[in-house]
Image 1: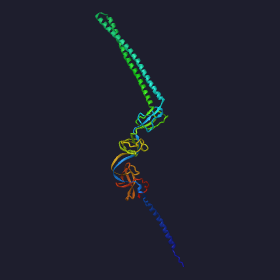
Image 2: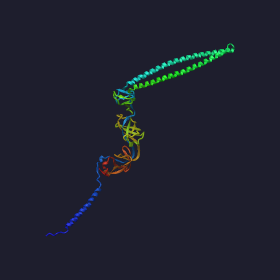
Image 3: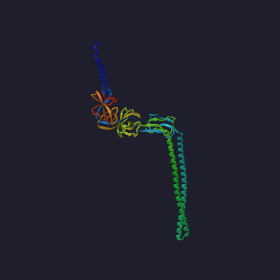
Image 4: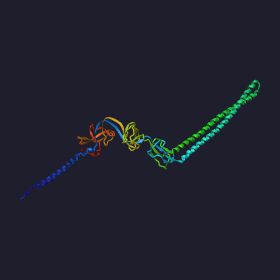
Length: 417
């Protein structure tokens, strides 16, 4: 016979309620605990990262930029007159002398103007010679007249003196002596007038001949200009060097001022470097530099800093102080390094992938005998091409990772495998 057990159902319900309550309490606690767990440190292949050790000592501040070799002396040859290209005698890349004819232009108007100008000079010279002969004749006539008047004056003077002496001796009339004296005075006046006329005529002749000579000089100057324009139809190099460019084709018409060619001296080159605007502020004239042509390194010196900024860079000209290596030609791409300052006894390390001067950056410092790396905040000061100055966050002997570690920014620790 079965005996009924009282209270069993009630106990089961109580037990189930306790279990449910325990679960409701445990789930939030477990969830909170799991949320506070730190993610496991990711593993990084140690062979794929670039590391360096913090050192103390001398550090050279340098800036680097890309650039090209350009000639120190470049001549852009313009057309001095309108014309048409009829011949090209030299091709780009050819060595030329300063008087080498590169091309020939044609302009009938210039040629005719040169002929006309030369004819005008001849006409002016002929007019001068004719005028001079005419004025010389006038001058001779005037001098002859002056000579006649002077002769008459001298005769009248002598006659007056004679009559005066006779009158004193009582051998002649006093009235005759007075008349002779009056005639001598009149002759003296006429003589002085003729002398003055000769002087005035001489000045007039000189002025007319000077004006005629000035006209000749003007015609000659115009003729020389036209001859130069005619000669410049034969376009010359202007300097010893190499023809770099020809900007026109045979048959092309050009106007005065059009660039025809470019000539440069390839033996005298300089480097034009493009330096980032933020780095160029410390560059000064006279600073030392090194230019890498990829076939040798040439020492140099900063000779010019462009005051303007183009596309975030400034152009810096470096004079080459050493011999050019083989293959150094205009427009060759080069790398340039400029020495800014030499720092003594500073804490420094290799330049990380990211990091601007006078900023604070995050770096992974190698710990636990190279098995792990932890993130540290590092304050850097001045920066160079390959090194940076360490102000805070690291000490001498610390090893840090300089590679780009942005993939692990979310982690404070990584494992080096």
